Image 1 (tube, rainbow, N blue to C red):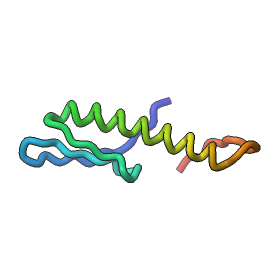
Image 2: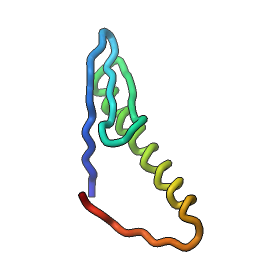
Image 3: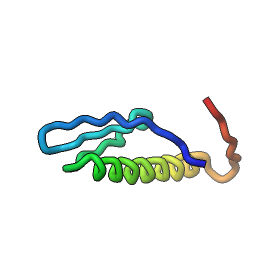
Image 4: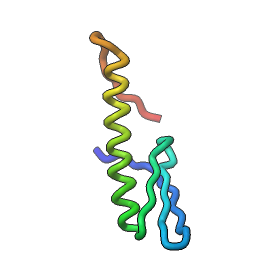
Length: 70
């Protein structure tokens, strides 16, 4: 199942700058819009995986996972 996120994109001279609205700190800049979208996807995947590992580490040994929706 794919999850959708919102990106804010701005063209600033020779650069395209973008932020993932829902995840603080996930932002990139590239020379073209297609390159920017690829970079944002990669940065988002890395951030989500890092956050996942960090949460599991913080939980310790005995925990369970449960899905929630908003």
